[in-house]
Image 1 (tube, rainbow, N blue to C red):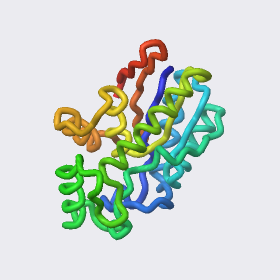
Image 2: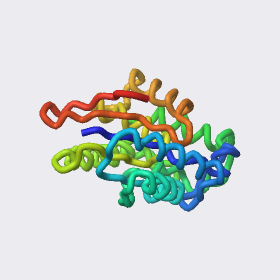
Image 3: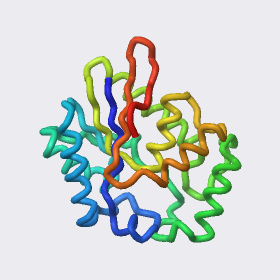
Image 4: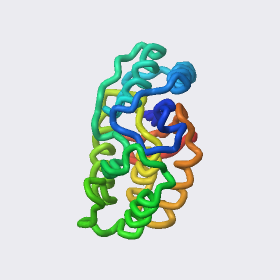
Length: 204
């Protein structure tokens, strides 16, 4: 089964480098990027389109769906990493952002640590594992699936699929570096071999 993990189109808060809200909508540029992503995805035949329930991903998926003749199916397990509510609208360069990221990384093996209502690494891994199982079960009835999600979740999800973990520095550092290079509307193409249970990254 082929799986395409697509980052949603741009939003105004994206462009301003600020933490977003679940209901942050696409900008005009984001809608254009979604159109372009949809056109690129028509080079292959797909039989299922899934979207994070966050507005920016849902809007992106609806636009992509017009090109693929597919109706998006909302799936909450693919939403972005949940930061604390108090960070929403704040700059990515705000001191509290650095505090959250630093502590989440250093305490990534501590399942009891939380910053307010934000997800910790244990929460992310649990959700990622649920997403992996969900996708693998789709292989029984689908051949090519498009998932519209979010940059940080996608880049942490990939090593979880391929290497079964993302907590080692060997897997974590490349994942974080890829977050910065994944543009809005970009896709990562993966393959799941239902016989061996092996995931591979085919194209970034």
